[in-house]
Image (tube, rainbow, N blue to C red; front, side, top):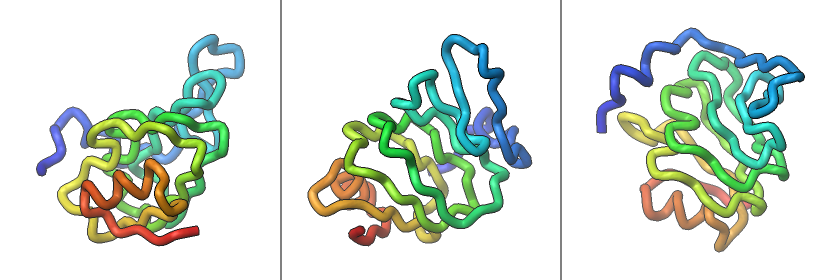
Length: 121
């Protein structure tokens, strides 16, 4: 799978900052969420950290949320996540990413279905 050009234009974006008065969106440590932090919308492509732990408030990981996050090696997905949208981890390959998840969780099923490495927490 190749990444659509529209999703590769923000490779140097390290943080997404949302005004606290914004009625629809919020951010935590530079990652974009909806206002109540139940939907993870976008993890910036240029973030340099190798691991990220999704907050327990998240129920949905949006389409293309982690596309282009080339530095990310470990992603911890809590059991609170009930849906991972198609192509949430859209990438040329998944060899560098390991999803840390609970056994029999949505993230576990996603990893198996999409041949993404995983380990149990």
